[in-house]
Image (cartoon, rainbow, N blue to C red; front, side, top):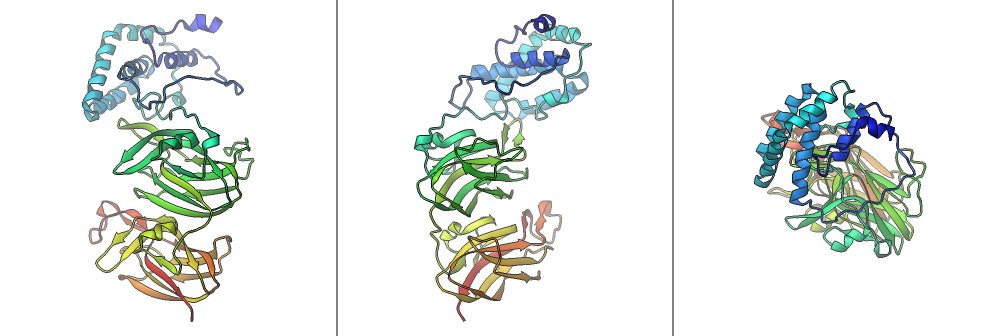
Length: 444
């Protein structure tokens, strides 16, 4: 009560939204020490529509601007005003009209804003850590809507195109979006889903997309559902399985990861080191987008090798591949610095034929290794020295028994040509390490 009497009442010109933000900043500036009650629980009712009403959007615009005008240092107001002007120019007609109405409202209430600044002129400055550098105009920026999962309806497959997928979403997911027949959900920097495996799983298949810029990729961890220990930041629990989805300059990624999980209930946790936003068009803090995820009992793949001309080859791609391309001679896929695929041999093989090429610009050698899917130890390895020119065919001498194998390609250097810095070479924003057309196995 003493603090409230000292700081004063809420700003009654802000009917709703940002009034608590304003009051919190005033408490900080008054020198109050703010602590977190870790055992506290807040049950907050909210809508699940995924879209704020036009009235709420207007109030948020008005009051967001008022909070900045009341508390931002004079030295930053010019930069902020320029940011707002650019936001108005870029906004759609409805958003532009809303921003102009918010500016008009703040102009009418400018006397009370200036009076507040005058009262606080001797108070401490706003701590930098309280200010989001994006200056996004969404509220609350970067926060996914509340979800109500149903563990009983969880299964081994998650399709974001299916409305029932919401039953498996724990937290961190935004509303479903549909573009060109492709359905997905954006996740924040932390997100999780429930899965129930009725049978042991040998493969995790993911269809997803990264954010447009490299923010460090996405970490994926699978842990038993009855384990309550946090995975981060202390990570006292070793997850049942984990991997990292390295960032790639690609619209849609398909990956098939070998694993070994017994039947049971699991939590799949997705964690990005940092989020991506692009205000004013995108004020959410996004980690990645997921289209589908499934845990399979086995690899249902063609035997004999790797054929990039086949549409079914996506079932074999483990990681690191860009989308298929077609030249006058062949179909192929470029790989990033590290890529891998799964192949199935129904009989022993003593040789392999690899059709490949290096990027057109300077890159590096490529190490090719082969290991069983249930092992991390390579049973074969060779180095392909980088050579100028077009497609090549290499015969590899090896000795493999029947079974499923992971073939990995590790490039010691990649090539890209953004903004065509090398005019004699084609433009290329991706970091390319190696291209594969086919890999076939044979007996002597």
